[in-house]
Length: 231
Image 1 (cartoon, rainbow, N blue to C red):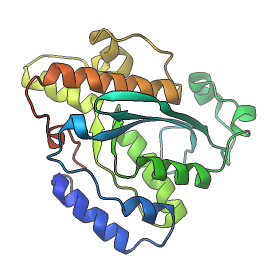
Image 2 (image 1 turned 90 degrees about the horizontal axis):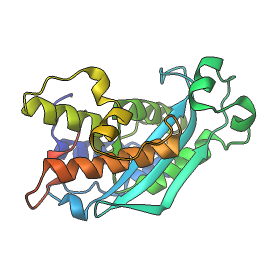
Image 3 (image 1 turned 90 degrees about the vertical axis):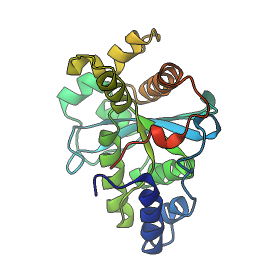
């Protein structure tokens, strides 16, 4: 249900675990989610971004995944990974112009199964950070359904939703384009990166999240549950 509490998310994890066959998804689900009462400074996050052949998770494919871990609200650059995945279809010219992933480059990538297995291992016990996170969730969920017969579940912080909530609470009028990742980074005086590269966008989302926490909250502690997306 849309308005389930985060505690029910962990209940859903246990239920999903019980019906998931041994393998990468089962191993991932075996690790409890962090407590929603945990302080953000003591929580491990993993920022993620995807580049795909299109916007529809049901028929388009993941081409690349960028991830980086954030511990104690500090980016761990030695954890940064950029994976390329071999697609089963030709890359549409319109999307290749945006993310600059050509058919030749994509064919040097690895299989979706291998990369999703790596991803699940790296995300176990962590909270996902992404900008407009439903996009990433939809594609990873579709991949898990296809590979393991079960969906994907994870606690999520959506940097776009955090900013939308902050502006609504302050009764600020804003336009949708002001919530884009590059626009918010400028608003928070963060450096500009080249857009539509999965790793640089994952790093950009991680930096934005840290900046948002610094501006939104000055009190202690910073309970994780205050920032989680409901889905």
